Image (cartoon, rainbow, N blue to C red; front, top):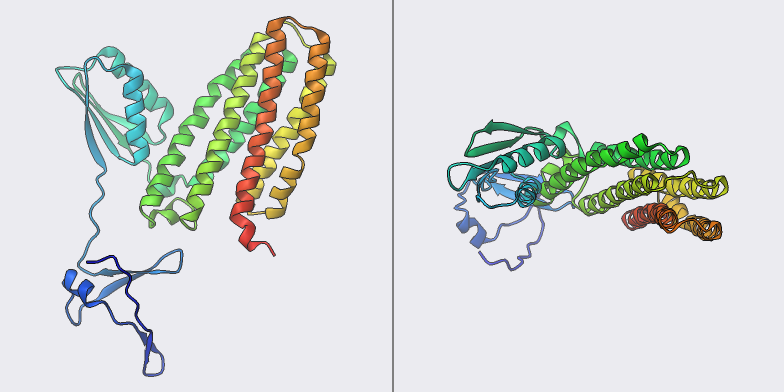
Length: 344
């Protein structure tokens, strides 16, 4: 059937029934007969989807088998698993091209799946095949809840990283680095869900969203949250590189800058979930305060004339704090774009 648009007039029969004629080409194409019924679905954009009762959508392929080559490096195999998970496959069969997968391939794959893929279990594991099964259904963990969770984790990571710098707490700094895996695994999960919703609008409600337009907003915000956690890791790693306590005056400036940055991030997240245009606008307005603190911090760091490694680590910490504030502003801009039409 041609994709050319057909125009039909709405007609009134009787006193309350509205009718629209159907294109003859479409009726013939779906083999619709007089007296048969149509299923009518209202879409999120108020359009209507007409589906003949006996016509079914093609079943979505949710299982895939892939060959694992003998010389395939474990990182490459892991990337393949991630791609198939994100695309939406519920069953992933890894089959050795010859007799068996190498021990390193199997161990790396199993470790990654257990640590990083939410709701995924290894349901079969033999020398020549490994079967991964995604058991978590869409309604069990909505995208909204998953995003809230990683935002809270990222905030906590940043605060702990700054505290580890103050107290020279290497154990806490190392814990911040390890916690990044938790953010990454939920990031994968959210991306998987959003891809599924874009491909099938019926999934939108199941994952906690109102319309397809929200998917892009959630994807961009999720990426910003994931980057905030990465910068918390950078702060922690650079704290570990600093071997001597830093000057209290410098730490006070860093702490003030950190407080402003994380407040901007938290407020931007709240504005996103609350669809609060004014709050988001205020977050962007406050960004100048972070810039002032950054200039002050760099000036004091250079004045102290630390060794090259300490100076470099401190400046990288300043940069990560600034980037955290910038990601808060990025999220706020997304909120402005999503809510501008609703602004009086």
